[in-house]
Length: 586
Image (cartoon, rainbow, N blue to C red; front, side):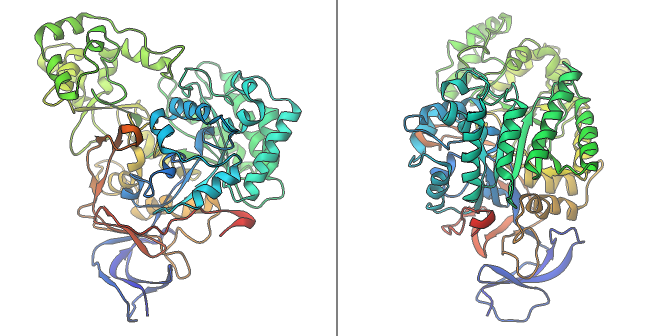
């Protein structure tokens, strides 16, 4: 007898085949049959017209701390994710020397905008080495499967101490010690190695991250830890800086190629359209294609939409956060703050002020923020109201620049009045990257590239500024159904979210709906599938706040055949586990 029969759904199998009507039979956590099934089953779901897809695999999350206190991996569980990978961008919480926990918390707080107080209260420490960290997480129940990567920054701090934080060059002895620790973690089943090389990442004190300037010799030396192993990936984020210095761009890409060559394992990097410097994404594409033609396994992680921020009075940032008149009332409860901002005298005063400098020493805020605040009138053309049904491809006509012109006032005044309306909960959508053309046409081009991986959700991170854990739902709905311009086939989008990412990671037991595969599945009502607006909740440890965005239309999500959510309600089932790769795979 089957444990579960999904009857009459539209199966999008994850392998790229056209959708077809079929039943799916499940027993002992595995798919045992796909087609017309007459066998008896303990549970039956009659789902004519519903989409049945493999569970989605998110390769770029930052749940490294949240995994310690949140069994459900919210909000990813609301968006069809059944397997996720954390430890990206070179930051994480292992290895760690006794007494070094606060240093790693400060690093994560600065780089990924996760409240330090929440991390300090929520993480249940109990490890020093990376394998011990894995064992600790594996012992806790979870809804979803997860993989962990070894982040460069903690590795460097563990071996080099203060010299790492001073960005000193690693000695051959340092590199050998780090390589030994990385190898130990990979042999324990870690999924790979990650490093961050971007000026936008800062510690909570505003300093450069410890590995941001690591040399080619250090990276290549660490990559040798993969030698003789048949598993593991490498993830890199870098600015590349083509606009500032073409020579630096090519030197940096040479370094990435050396890293990939030394590891001989798949390497993925962030791919986006910068502003300024929009042409850089094409230069990255050209270098990747040339490298792939020479046999290097390079991949490009692409976002499903613009990469930007949510601005609001209670979010981490908004256009008036640096104004002296706003700072005077910044500590008031949200509703009282909005009312105080509506006072005509205060309004006139703030609109006549200039913002104080926010970035610099002692703060993780990147210089870009100050530049943007000084150019509000200009960049208001890329700021848009975000409603209860968010539109992530708005036009110039929707912008605050045009909104202001229609009302005959400066854009800064239109932004001000919108933010302090009602209870002060209005949000502004500000796509910084991937939106130079005022549309998502560039994202369409990226998504069509054969080396593209669906990634960059940053789920669990930047909790006061973004909520891109919803990328999977957006990818399906916007790009296959809702967009009026060029779309993409549904079967290709499902393949990107499932089997393509599984193949990249080396996961052979999931990502496709076929007999013998794990029963990691989504059942969705396509007529209802869509995103709700982000909500700011204070549900982190120590009362920390974060944006949470949920979805409609997910009838059920199954992990190993057990329903972890039905109709948006998270169940008490905890089938999730740490996925170990290589000889330690379980």
